[in-house]
Image (cartoon, rainbow, N blue to C red; front, side):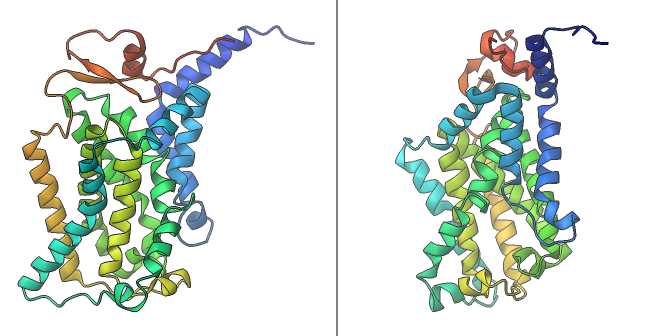
Amino acid sequence: MTGRRLLPKPIERATVRALIGKHQIAIFLVLTFVISWYPWYTGGQGFRAAGPSIAGLIVVGATSGWTGIRGMLRRFTKWRVAGIWWAAAILGPPAIILAAIGIHLLLGGDPPSFLVWKVEPLMVPIFMLILLSPMGGALGEEVFGWRGYAQPVLQMKWGRWGPLVTSLIIGVVWAVWHLPEFFNPASSQYALGLGGMAPLLVTEIANSIFMTWLFLRTGGSVLVAGIAWHLMIDTSSTMFVDLTVTGMLAGETIPPIDRGLLAVITVVMASLALLLILVTKGRLGHPSSGKLQWDHAGHRLRSQSVDAKPTGDAALSETSAPRLRRS
């Protein structure tokens, strides 16, 4: 005996799509941790760095299809921005680390060995290429993940405070997401021990604030705000980690990290992030008045009065509902 379908197939698909869209942030976070932590909770070590992007692809594919995925790809490939923002993304992280090292020395601390830069400087570009692999940190986490998906979807929910709230949320999730690395002998987090979660939490929130600022100032360029900054902050860590790139690739255990220097780096990053919040009055590049609107694929539309009722694509963004495709 066969039963009649209660709803036409296109309506069923639209209903499921709308349901996923309504809870897309929660679904994204659950998928991110389930996918990323798979090696750890199945008895292995470490995590899958590409988890956030895989999760973002699944959610956007289910809610917006190829239209949403193309939107994320456009943000990823957006390279035509003012040179000052490229300079900030590329030079900012090493400048922050070097400034922290200088302060550490002034306070009587020991200088880092700069082992990689002394012993095998030509390996640094190779290290950067590894980080840029599809399964590496910068690409795997950012293209469809933290900045590619979560950034625009989260910040549209809180009006003028959206960028700041988004930075705090992503920063906290980003830090907790690294938990399996504290049990992986080949990671820098393992060298810190679980006590390193506190400075990691502070620095990841600070990084998120810097990256949100760049994201908004560049009109949503994931390439600049996500990939470039993330790549350079990871590369800058080679200045104070006493292990060569060859040793890292061989899976050697990273020696203990100077906790005094780490504390100074944490304070410097937190102070600069706080200064940026004060200078921008908490907006981090958000329009001085009105509410920033994004469409279903995360494209920036316009600044709209907070009291005005969103319409069209802006209304779709406001309710987190995906645009329905014609069947």
